Length: 206
Ligand SMILES: [Zn+2]
Image (cartoon, rainbow, N blue to C red; front, side, top):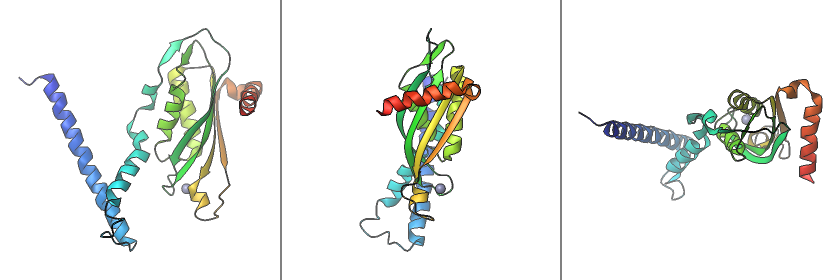
């Protein structure tokens, strides 16, 4: 009879082998890309580049292999006023060019008997951003995930980002920023709540 721990060990080894095979494949694709672009893989600066770039892209896309809902542990609370977590740094990957965009996100919610630990909101945002996703969908999916797991009366996610694909190619606008907002629940119905959220952010900015 095979023990359960042995089965789990074997499954982990199989997963590691699969991850290793996929990393090798990614490395060879990047090797081909470098050669195709006319660069010399024998050059000292390019020798380790395929492995480094493979690791980099695995890191930039790690969010798609994680379950964001599992991050949001909730607690009971009587607090029923607006909660705001501001100035959360994030970076993500534009799915159209696979270039980085980065910025700040502000998040607010109106609890309905349940709150989440402070660090969980930045972790949710950073995990959901760690994959190729347009900034418009990023704020929407963060708000939707929060609504379905924490079930507050409403929430708002506001992100401002600078996109490398706008800065280094095409129009080459280095300073252009994009702001996207997702409103859910009572934030969609009551403009006074959105105003309160913006007022809190203005006070935090000072
Ligand atoms: Zn782009």
